[in-house]
Amino acid sequence: MRIGVMIGPEKGDSARKLSRMLADIEWAESAGLDTAWIPQLPTDFDALITVALMGTRTSRIELGTAVVPLQAQHPIALARQALSAHAAAGGRLALGVGPSHHWIVRDMLGLPYDRPAAYTRDYLEVLNAGLAGPGPVEVENTSFRVHNQLDLGPVEPLPVLIAALGPVMLRIAGEQADGTILWMADERAIAEHVVPKITKAAAEGGRPAPRVVAGLPVCLCRPAQVDEARARANRILGEAEVSPNYQRLLEKGAARDIGDLCVAGDEAAIAAGLRRYAEAGATDLSVRLLPLGDDRDELVASKRRTREMIAALAKESR
Figure 1: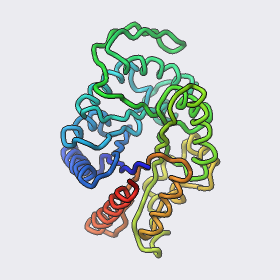
Figure 2: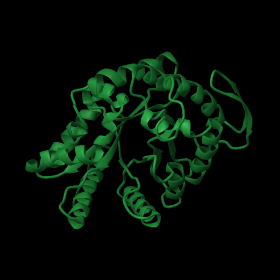
Figure 3: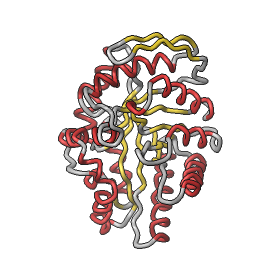
Figure 4: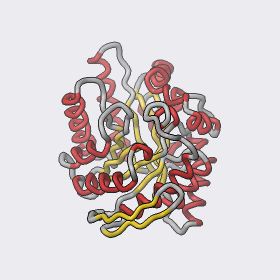
């Protein structure tokens, strides 16, 4: 199982956010982590531009987006941007995309959010054709009429991963992509819902076994602090639970909220928690570091301890 870390913009002005993200990716590569996953927040840094910048500071680590909303740009524009970032990163991009949520697409962007799975299928037909360039992209389907030349091609194979939570989206991910990126999925949901459906779809489509990237918060702390860590996860990461997409995924597992999904405790407890995800069928872990503390110094020290432990586990997993 590959072990990676989420790296995204935090508080501060743009210059400080960028310098922190670049420092974090330099640490992740030097620590030997397999992957880094850059979230595309609707109000913050562009994930693919961030990947391109990170590519100039690293030489080995895979750089993934988690995830770029499809509705915000035409698939030809996304193909062009992804191929450019992929080249800038020396062929190390994993393009994570998804149909997002109604509260982003409809309420924030003012765009339709009708039949998101069908739209994703149509979008991927164009996107995959664009990523296979250079050459003409000739696709006509229900959503697109595309006749566009692209002079770019991938410098290395470029995996595409879909944020797929429900049965239809998992089938699309298995048929048309290289795997899925998950959030709010516990071990039971992965083992009993995600892996069987996406693996079956990939096999029926003659595609390789798909990647299953499980995103989850992790906090190294004393056993007596586990409840505090879970409460903090609910406080700072719980907004997404209002999405019907995530609510339906939670129903497939045993977790009620993001706090239940938080892997917290001492080194042994965290190692056991991550091992359960591997046994459930996750091929990759995307760790969202969750520090504890009453002030900035304590939070920084907590984050440092957690990430050093994650780096040690990544080395052991090889």
